[in-house]
Length: 303
Image (tube, rainbow, N blue to C red; front, side, top):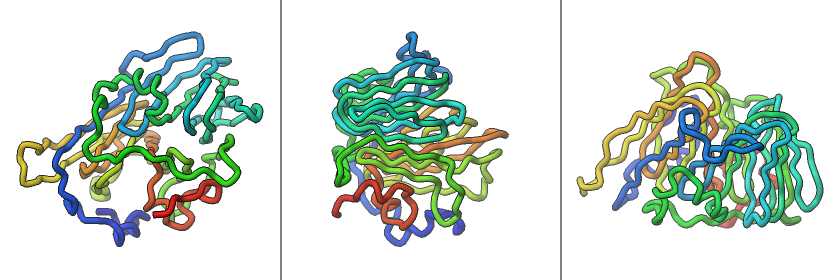
């Protein structure tokens, strides 16, 4: 259910109604409250918090100037979000070193790579669970010892014809009411950097919806939010779950599992910045012309 002025309302022609697929079990939401938890890694490079979903691992870092974050044998492509314009990093891969400015997203190829902080600031790195060291280090690793009941096994999307290389994109893109947010994708992730909301969200313009078979990671970078979740009733009352209204400050993540009906309300009086993360990328967003800003750099799989 989207407001008629919401660009996602155009997706409804291909969407299934809530409850169209009958799920035999449910899996609860997961929170990573980085603003109140102790960092999982604290060293000369900075402070890092790690949390995960079934198909992704989020590493949020408050890096120190000169801090370095290396991957020696990275198995697949990973993503980096640099939220603040004042932050700058160098990313080194087998092809050389590139300076990436703040307010950008970058996609880093497999193999050996490193990120060096040219200034102090925050970065967010996104990995798949193939990065087993980080998956095991997540604060909620125990919740994912077994398979998620409603999420298919992760499958990466096709590589570009020229192979995987470092790519980065500015987030300084004009708003366009015909598309939803600012969306970038690679072989492993889709990042939707939503238009920041100033002040609380109107209570008569929310967007409850559900996903049948993929997770959503809602990353709060500034402001405060309440994530509202409701699980559909089935004929088996043993799997029913209570509604959740999860109040989160920043920085934090909320992992929203399928098929929870969900919507999020901004609560802060200032800038409320939310980023939606999906692994692998979403087909429905990718099929909308012009929604994925780097669609020419990464091909879609055949359905």
